[in-house]
Length: 106
Image (cartoon, rainbow, N blue to C red; front, top):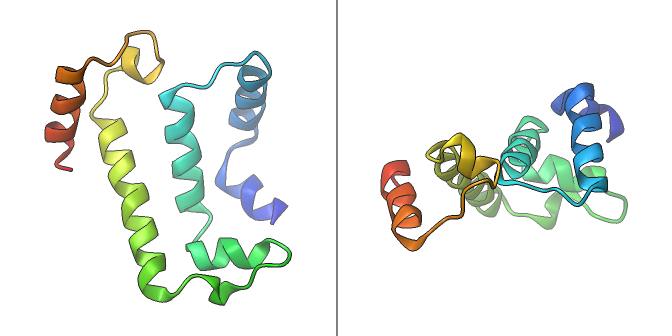
């Protein structure tokens, strides 16, 4: 599993994220990078099978596709955000949240 994670998330990004997390910083940009890393690791069934005690049959094929689609929808929403919003420098007001939803097609 460590090899898969190492391949999915570049080493410099891992260090940067750990530094930010140790300072209590977690932004939408971090979330986006994590979700992209999960998708790069393979199917949800493959990921679950790498965790001791879980099997690849824990998630059915239909649910596996559904999970991946949900992650992609979150990524579409994050793609519709500005850099300030991704970095949590600008608060998300209800009208902007609505616009992000419409702009991302979700």
